[in-house]
Amino acid sequence: MNPIVVIPARMAATRLPDKPLADIGGVSMIVRVLRQAQAAGIGPVAVAAGDISIVHAVRKAGGTAVLTDPGLPSGSDRILAALEELDPERRHDVVINLQGDMPFVQPSVLSACADLLSAHPGCDIATVVAPEASPADRSNPDVVKAVLAMEQDGLSGRALYFTRSTLYGDAPIWRHIGIYGYRRAALEAFNAAPPSPLEKREKLEQLRAMELGLQLRAAVAAEAPISVDNPSDLEAARAYAAGKSA
Image 1 (cartoon, rainbow, N blue to C red):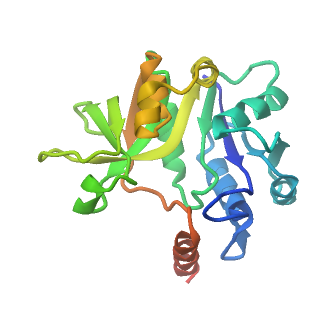
Image 2 (cartoon, one colour):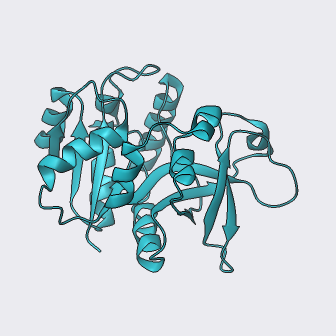
């Protein structure tokens, strides 16, 4: 297995424009994500950028970045476009898709994705879940819940479904974290397929993979990483960075 980590990023975010270059404790968000991915040590790391300003920021920090068509509709499209330039010989058979808005993601979380693919040859896509942060998560449609058939060790499970709906009962609720490890063939099959009925119903693209018959497994992280989607998230990230430096 020969993984590569690719971070899709673009400036035109609706809720927080220009967020890849947002300053967090003196370091741009995209550079923080890049450094966390590099610290995982699972393979080369590159940014699939939709804007030249992101490319400049990453290269100035010593990283690798590829400029992709800003009109591409999704992060997975951006990743595949970058791979054509980064790896035309197809040496990398596993692609870790790390979102560019997780500036403090633990490197071990990325390693867990790669480890799942290594341990389970039948797994096409690996992802990550974390325990619910509060009981309110169970009924919050913005919190995506993963329904898993857990392994006995409680550290991972096979994904049965993902939903925004309320889940009932006494079993743990797993929050889905949008980090994916794809076998390259699975990424290409996913991207070639149109949005599926369940994907459109739940507004969750991972359901397209499940409807294609691809097997998804999820590793359990201790907690969900900070994700920056809006101005208040950015202020929280800056406060977190200030606390760490203090």
